[in-house]
Image (cartoon, rainbow, N blue to C red; front, side, top):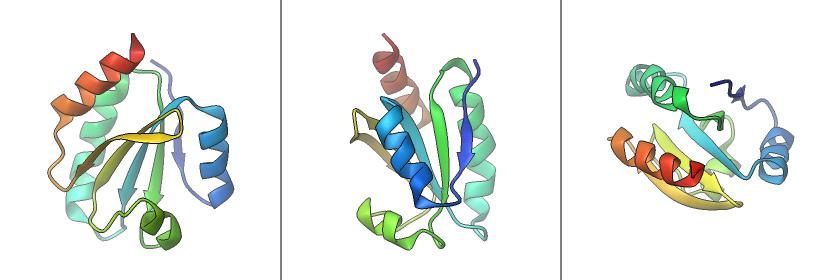
Length: 107
């Protein structure tokens, strides 16, 4: 399916997602995170069957946003539904759990 992948460049993009998207995924990473680089393509392939936008956030650049969501370790995947966090996966990402929740939200 077609989905938007947005690499966060300014916080207004985040606020726009919150206002316009009922459900979207936030992926917190840092440029020097090797695990993040390995898991990102896996996350994209898991999201292929869904029509949810992905917001990729550099936690070292957007420290205020990272702090707001209490992201202290990368990679962190958050699923936001109706402006609330409904799932958090950090470091050891359980893709089955993400897939199950997105299937539930799709129905």
